[in-house]
Image (cartoon, rainbow over the protein chains, first blue to last red):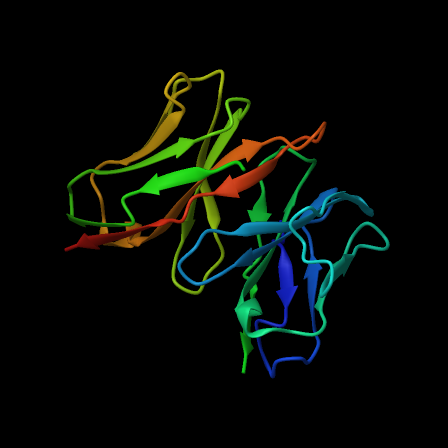
Length: 113
Length: 115
């Protein structure tokens, strides 16, 4: 079975610019997660979707981050405007349903200049 | 807030030796504890997990033990090989309101296996 697909793999932008990441989960997986992984730390959940609805976005900095999963499959995560502290790897994960094992994509490495 | 502490942050062993990584969690309602292996520049990969109704689980050279009373769980790797070198993350599922729960991760342990 195909894994979680993410693009782009790398992105370099200047602070105050905007950026978007895309994720395609494993086919049939209803639950999709976006994580932020800062160098040397474990992944930190930003937002969880169940189909096209938000289950948990308590740790999403909503003044600059937004995410959507309009048709309950693909998802995009956007940052606008970016800050230096947003430099991190952004990981997408999916699971058949909430509470079941999560499978990660390769992530997008974001560098802010 | 909820927290997962992971120790040690780095671990170096000789090939063939055993490695043990320990984690403690704060939410007594946590009921699911996965372990992920992340090689440099690659995705975290689920290697083993355990649920709170089980005290131990084994998969070939990897085992996980859980002590619910003490709120800690450990990863054991026996007969280590150079390809086991990676960063290992533990996680615990915590619950927010009536949700199905989400994972909170430890900070990771960098394991180096020397040939």
